[in-house]
Amino acid sequence: MADRKQDEKMRIAKYLSRAGIASRREAERLIGAGRVSVNAMTLNTPAFLVSGSEDIRVDGEAVGAPPAPRLWRYHKPSGLITSHSDEKERPTVFDRLPETMPRVISVGRLDLNSEGLLLLTNDGALARTLELPKTGWTRRYRVRAWGRVTQDRLDRLQKGVMLDGRRSGPIEAKIEIIKGDNAWIEVRLKEGKNREVRRALETLDLKVNRLIRISFGPFILGNLARGAVDEVRPKQLREQLGGMLPSIR
Image 1 (cartoon, rainbow, N blue to C red):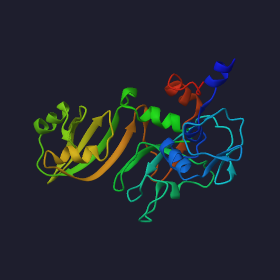
Image 2: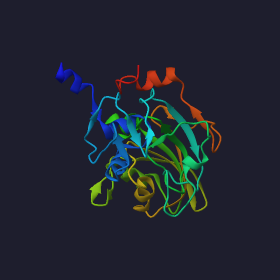
Image 3: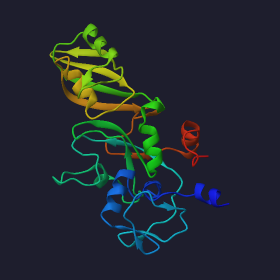
Image 4: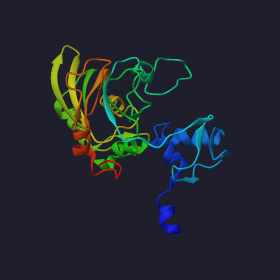
C-alpha cells in the first residue's frame, strides 16, 4: 500500500509545472527562492513529493489541482520575446495574450525577430514532451535570406552543421523563389536549438532577414491572423497526442 501511495505522488516542481504555474525549471527557481510551501512548510528542494491533496502555495497563493492539458496555436508577431519576464523590459508574447486565457507556457521558443506558429499549453509535462527530439516532429519554416544561394549549397545542410562544437541534426532546405539578392527558402528540421535555422544558414554565408515558422508537427499556422490565438480542439488533441501523456485521454 505504501509503495502504491508513493507511486501516486510526483515531485513538487513537476506538480507546479503540470498546474501551469511555471515551467519545471522556473518552478525549481521559485522553490530555491523560498516562495513555495506545502502544508505551511517552506520547501528548499524541488524533489519533495506531493499527491495534490496538500495545501500547496506559491507566494502565499493556493495552487489548485492540475487542470486537463490544453493546447493553443498562436501567431507570434516579430518584436516579442518568448518569456514571461525580461530584464530589458521588452514586450513579451504573454503580455499580448487575451486576459481570459489561463497561465500558459510555450512549447519551445521563437526569438525576438522570428514570427509564426508558437504552441502554448497550460501543462509543463506536455510542453517538454512536444519539445523532445525523440518525439520526431518536424518544424517547418519559411525563411527569407540575403546572399548567393544554390540548391547544391543548401543540400550540404542535410548532413548537419557544427554549431557550438556539436553537429546539428539533418536540416532540409529547398529554394522556393529567388528575387534579386534575396531568396525564400523552406527549411525543415526536427530540433529547434537556439537560433539554429539562422546560424545554420550563416554557415553558407546567408543572412536571414525574415523567419516564419509555418508548422510544428501536425499543427500548422494556416491562415491564423498575426497576433491571434486559437485553442486546439480536445478531439484533435486526443488524436494527435493521446499516446504521449497518460493525462490525455
